[in-house]
Image (cartoon, rainbow, N blue to C red; front, top):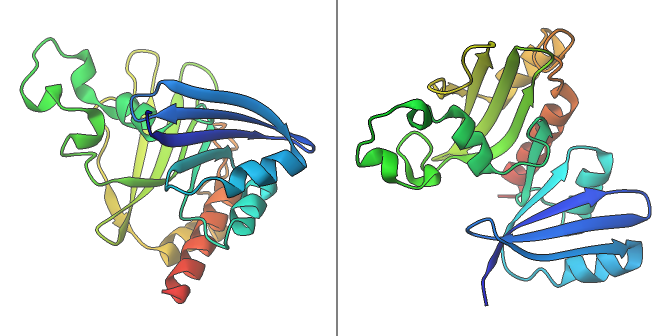
Length: 208
């Protein structure tokens, strides 16, 4: 039996739409459950997997209800709201547009040196018109990194995966005192979700 690696959950007030994928992106199961049945089903998730939900208060409630940790919660927003890490990597992967392919380009996206070991915590991509703006926060080797990208009508995000090391405190300041995640012009809001992710990380760190 194929092992599930990703679970996508569409949250609503009384019903929950669930899609289960294996490591290759193949759909293993789809179901719609009411609240009580969803709680029973969630308890059956004994093996680690990535759980993707639209970022909202309900998402963080359910993660905390499953043990008080957001370690399994990955936040994808706006154009990436139904996406996975592979979708994010694919949009940034410059090799997809080139005619020349070397050995590195043949590797699975998650194994390519720029993306290897990147544990995405939040990924948001907005495209108000012919332009688009993207922000990715990920963790690797115990450090936080951010990637910022944009595209116009001629080019996408390819080749813009240029991580910059950051800290939770710096990100909080940029949200509260600046415009990070405001999304007023680029239609890519993620400020509230980013602050929640940072709070969850702080809580996990304190627990050790």
